[in-house]
Length: 285
Image (cartoon, rainbow, N blue to C red):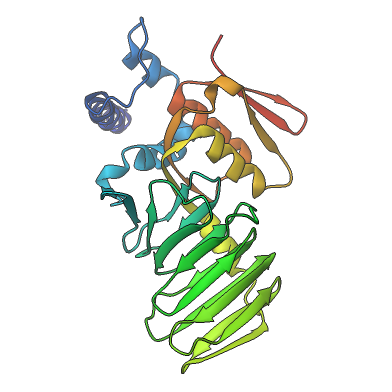
């Protein structure tokens, strides 16, 4: 009995410390009734791991350096070593999944005739189609030109470069030799010893690795839900229109769509209902 009481006291102390930190950082929903008691009583033990994961993402400033450095007309988003995939959505709806030690520099607003960014490291991209505004990625080794497609870029090593296309078509140009190749779905462009060539892709799991441990920082809820839905076939999430601009910071680690929906609701003080294969996320009644 004494051991059980000691464990309970330690558990209560841990939750109190966690609650105090969340309250200090303004990360708890405001309500007329006292929040602390409701917060403590509404957390089943089976949710302990999920909530710990959510809070690790919510107070991401403790763990991940993913800062926006403001320049006159440029933004730089950088991820650190050993951190989860960092997801960001550009103003045109295109999405970048930054691996550890990767960074992307891009303008506050894309030009009218092109969308140009600069990448260091490894990243996966989902580019929105726009034939009038090609999406251009500059790396140290190559220039990548796309209209609308999904592909993986590996440019961490300054001596090597590869690009694997999952959907669509991409043009890759070596900056040193000026040689270009067109890469289609199922192909990989390799740049080795200043030679650029297209081969059949062997490692198809590379596209999914980015999704296993991902971190959203200050992303619009509509974009988070869109990314979740694009990467699952079984269940789709749906939010009411007025929630789309809510900002969310959260980390997912091999979670199911159901768990991700529950974590979103916990983070933003929302409610969900399930209708067959649709999970609806709404304001609490």
